[in-house]
View 1 (cartoon, one colour):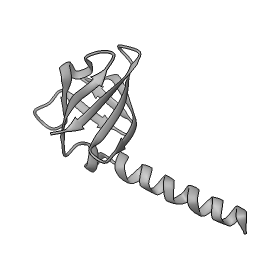
View 2 (cartoon, helix red, strand yellow):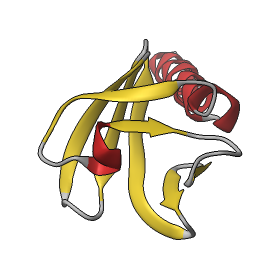
View 3 (cartoon, one colour):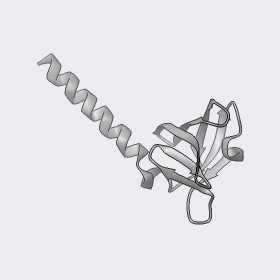
View 4 (cartoon, one colour):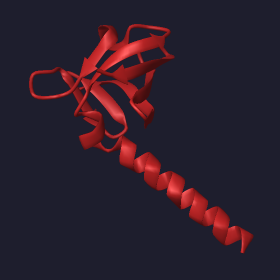
Length: 94
């Protein structure tokens, strides 16, 4: 019984994680950096036709080159590991 509860809890967490990491959620906002070690994206990251950034779960690419990995996206917050800066950056949508 305890094992079933643990599996259900894990599946709920996994479904929340997948929901907030899907492309339609991340790409619908303009993300402004709130803190972090570097200036990944110059402080603002937006996705779309007029932007050089592209999101392919869980990677953020700029002009075809992978520049970051989305670690967590939840409740207006985006946490990205910058491959260029080798650090974690925090964003909030505008």
